[in-house]
Image (tube, rainbow, N blue to C red; front, side, top):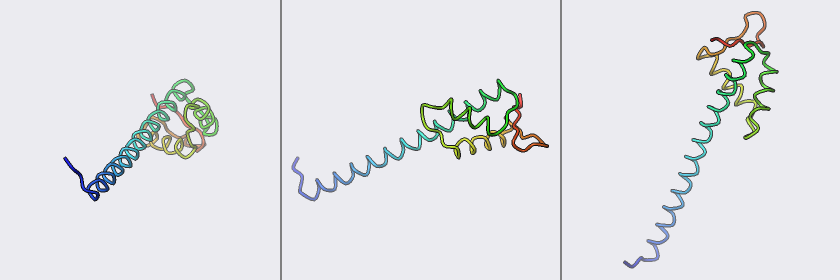
Length: 102
């Protein structure tokens, strides 16, 4: 089968598009896996401690997740998600204190 010059350019552009698509798909899956890892670490720490100040929880989770540099904003989002799903609750008197709900 013979290709014309324009056909080859079109095939190269299509394969380049597929490479970009796979890259962004991989990034999306990696971000989702990171979110799950952060949530799992938060629950693991809170199960052992039962109650913890926000600052201490943030430091401990950040230090335990050395494999990838978990950003503080990601940890905060996952904390909020766990609070909404009622795995954690904030103290009524001290807003910086989290309690694990078993």
